[in-house]
Image 1 (cartoon, protein in one colour):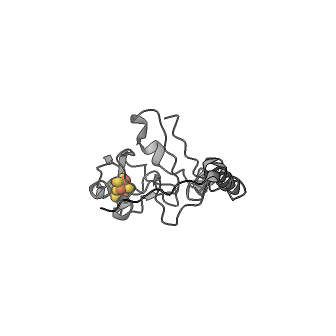
Image 2 (cartoon, protein in one colour):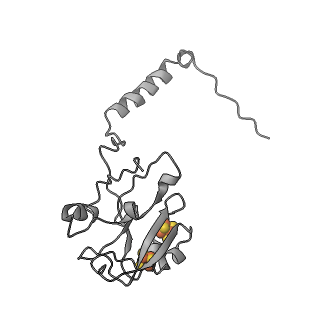
Image 3 (cartoon, rainbow, N blue to C red):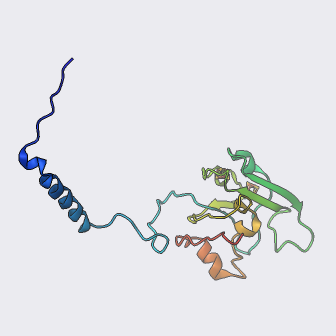
Length: 180
Ligand code: SF4
Ligand code: SF4
């Protein structure tokens, strides 16, 4: 076994002044470097082009809900985070729902979701996508269960500005769910 002897400190080193000076130099050096932190949420950094944030239930160009409650997204979801209830479109509701069947209830449990994007991949109707919005916060677990009220994109006919903003134009990532 080899014993490594500690090098004895010189008288100068025993004053600790060199060590203090060295430490202060490093500290002052950092004061003039560009700060790596940003003042979130006032400022945000751009996400990757493949970033997957909160889900949006899509409408067509006439403002009709695209989802036909086929359940493929729920089947594809590895977290079993999606639940829905299908309903039949009634005569006179053609301007509300694109297909003969629609999701009367559609919920995603964001506490289960791993934002894998498989629901988007599985959807044959382009009815769901993962947006760039990602600021979920809440005080209760129930508040993280998003229903159609939270997921459905604004109507492009009735609310064109809100629709355009939600279409991504969502980089501001201003979704606040604290009131839920
Ligand atoms: S992103 Fe993935 S985990 Fe989240 S709801 Fe869609 S399929 Fe499920
Ligand atoms: S979001 Fe798409 S996959 Fe899911 S139920 Fe609606 S139409 Fe089917």
